[in-house]
Amino acid sequence: MAGRDLGSRRCQDVLDAVRLTSALPNEDYPAFILATLLLLAEALETGASREDVSLYWQTFRGHYRVAAATERAAIAQAIRRIGILEGGDVTLPETAADRATARATDLKPLLSPKGKRRLAPLAPSDPMVHADLLVDAFQFEEAAADAQAIWQQDGALLSRTAPPEILAGFRHLYEIRDSWAPDGAEMIPLLDTPPGVSWPN
Image 1: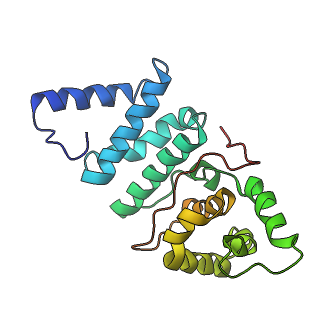
Image 2: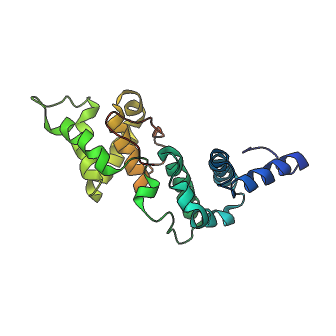
């Protein structure tokens, strides 16, 4: 839908149908989630209907919160980013848990043993050297800034070589910190579940 001329009658009819579906969670829930994602993608790409986006979360947050974690986080992130782009008072979605694909409490046990239980220091090129830093970065600004610099410099390499729990740690920082999005940096992949993590629903 994004990038097409929505001025035509057919495209307008499709857009109207998508908008209607995005307002009817009890009719067809998977279609409701898909329609919401399509409208948010359109708003991010073209600026269309951004004035309506703030109402999405207020009206349907209970429905979004029971979606699959990747879908719920994508919806929450899009609403948050649109609020930032619009320059308004960004208060929604209101909790980091809404915006994060995985909880920090689920990720820490995966990262901490990697950093603590080793017989010899890891080579600087080993992505697991970042495990301890990521755990600290979930709480502390200085560590988060250090992790941001690492992703800015090595994100492309890490996205190809890092274990899933390391990538999930970097993604968590992006999701919970509005300013943690280095310009020009490698996009952080939206992951399948790392071993040991059950995405919250």
